[in-house]
Length: 254
Ligand code: HEC
Image (cartoon, protein in one colour):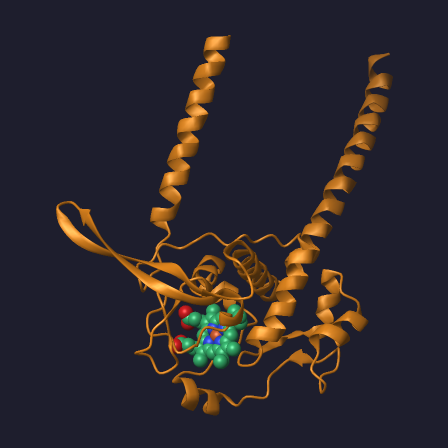
């Protein structure tokens, strides 16, 4: 018995090892070849979604709209209308209005080369892991007009939107040997610190991406709640059906 258990355990460990080592290599960003990091998406975590909404309004809505998302939907996340008004709205917005911005796309294009896309469904079109990696891959690059470059999207038109939080990360280039060839491996190294340390910054970016995922499919929060109610209902129904079955068979047996 003990032997069997040991063997089963060993099999589980090797399966886990295969899964863990296979995951990062299969997740490469299409354009830049940088390995994607996994975004900690959890739509049940209302506090994370609230923090993400706050970051989105403060750091992204200067340029990006979310035209198909209304501020009052944020009550789904447990925020009251007062909190939305106090922490998230600009003076001119009403609680029921969509998350639009004042910048004209044509102006944005002139300033940054490209118009910032609407963010309502960005997590569905660009995938959460990519956006998470993108926001962690900025580095200082004096040769660029805006002073920033990005490993996940080289020469991106968007300047680092969270530089105050992350600080000014630097590019690190190492020479490594691979199959007898010298290859350059690029990574991000900490530079001048920002308001958050590395762990806090990762969490902030995680909350923000979590919110972007929520914004693309807000009904998911609701539908998983409905799912739980349905399962509960089915469980109770099962008890009654079983009792009914006993009742029917009692008459037949006697
Ligand atoms: C200063 C204006 C500005 C701010 C602030 C800003 N962005 Fe952007 N963003 C842009 C522009 C411009 C583009 C288009 C860049 C390009 O394709 O070269 C863009 C593109 C993007 C993209 C698409 C990248 C791709 O691969 O096509 C994502 C995702 C994104 N922004 C997320 C964010 C998030 C999240 C925030 C808030 C933390 C934010 N942006 C804040 C200007 C901005």
